[in-house]
Length: 120
Image (cartoon, rainbow, N blue to C red; front, top):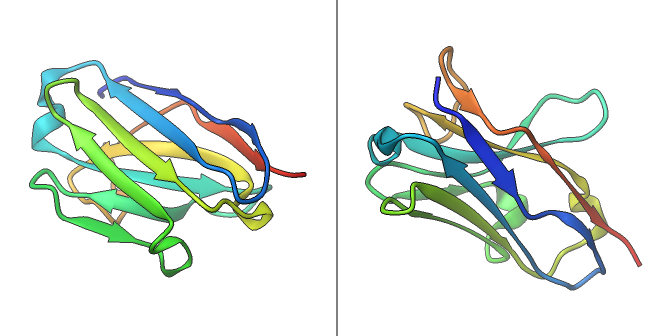
């Protein structure tokens, strides 16, 4: 599996912005889709956004227009830009590398997770 190292996250006030990064350890990054998921408590990991190897993007309805997923293949890094943040998006965020941008499959690689807390 590919090692994914996440950075970013932390505390932010409502209405604020934050960018999460996910750096992959191998150059095969460009051949795979990336996704950002979030998890709260004991719930399942919910898809937030995905991007295919070719750059096609997908978003959960709840984040459309506020979140932007992107990738830089030269830097083997994916990003999640989050704007107009609301407390309801508080969760642990995970990046994922795999064959599908919007589904979880066996063999996917995951980042270590990073806490995003939106609070005043």
